[in-house]
Length: 281
Image 1 (cartoon, rainbow, N blue to C red):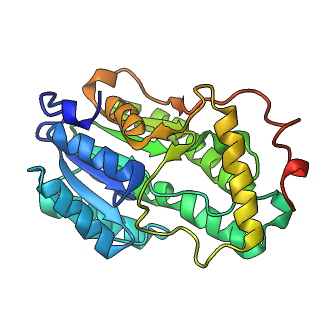
Image 2 (image 1 turned 45 degrees about the horizontal axis):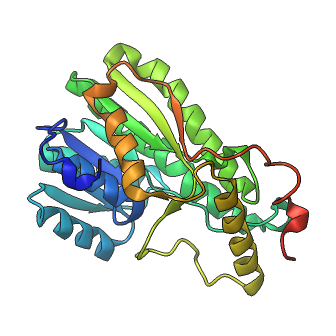
């Protein structure tokens, strides 16, 4: 069921949803899906222009929405984003920590110290800080809630080890936090997408243009993961958003502490086709 079929399904009526990295890709598809199902949406993104454009697109569909431009790599930015939800809509019922994403795809020994640091800052700290900022608000509300952290099935780890380690931390955060928050009726789950097609990217991940070698590594990487997909293709952002919306809804009221793979690959991960030695170098 795509986003067009959700208007009759109002699972998030009178709910407030905060979605990070919501200016594009899985984040925007999720914000749209939740909004079409009745949620008021806070679009959180580091890029003010794309965030404003996303809000305009949501409002055009009669979805109550505001933007919060914030750097989620530090606690102050995360706290400011969560406070925006309280100020604009009175609380937080659903938190989708979607921000993050790998920049480089190459063998681990080719990463510089700065590249490793950036990968961790982009993909691990934002969900950690956002959970820390949102949880006290959600507990104080005494109405339960749902947190969905977007991880990655890259935790199996090929050609992007710093990102894989970061997303492994996101999965661990999710399962541990689910235990701590169970008594408050706040569910925490992790969705781990595989390759997902994102068109018309509005915010570039890399701080500068990739080198020709990085471009070759990236092309080899995407050819590999597409070949390894059990379904033989990339997911759409709407397919990923559908799983997130299910987990955030009362339809999943007894689901917590789960890490759900939404992009299963085949098993030839460590040897044969796609090993680091096969990458162009």
